[in-house]
Length: 226
Ligand code: SF4
Image 1 (spheres, helix red, strand yellow):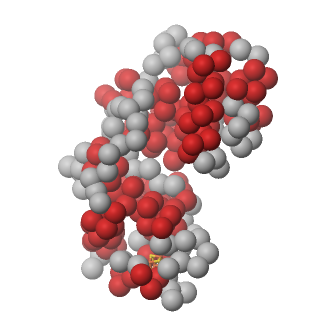
Image 2: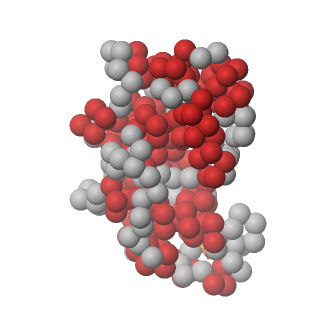
């Protein structure tokens, strides 16, 4: 079995195990998704959601977020981790979108690019890495077939041996995306991410993975498998 075949077999088992197809959790526009994603780093989802709400209640348009004193943005998002880093980063990201889009705060045009081109465009924004660029394309209403790889997904992929054991999120994301069949649409790619992520959250824990009840145990290379 090639690594690609193993990856697709694992994907199929995990999608079945966790009940794919999964209902997407949001239909935000891509600029909102970009801001939400920048807020979410090392922060729990409910906290990210309430900080996003507070930000948009305090400063209802992205233009207002750009023009506001950074302290005001920071105070609106105070509940997330590192608000002092994220506030200027969000303002700068929005500023860059507006500048590079000729004055428009709009990312809908990304739907006309390939996933790789769209990710490259986004990753030129400071603070936007592989996870954020994929999240903007996959989780927003654009629903493009960009594979989001978070730390849970990365861990399952590393341990099972379908990416090298020390592959970064960027590297893992590149390898895993290349395994996916070209005809998969955004929802199918979203399912793949959800299957891996749920497995990392519920079974393949960072400490003490529950290998004895793991449905992909036979396909896993992890040397400390119990
Ligand atoms: S066998 Fe263990 S290490 Fe391998 S994927 Fe399953 S839980 Fe993770």
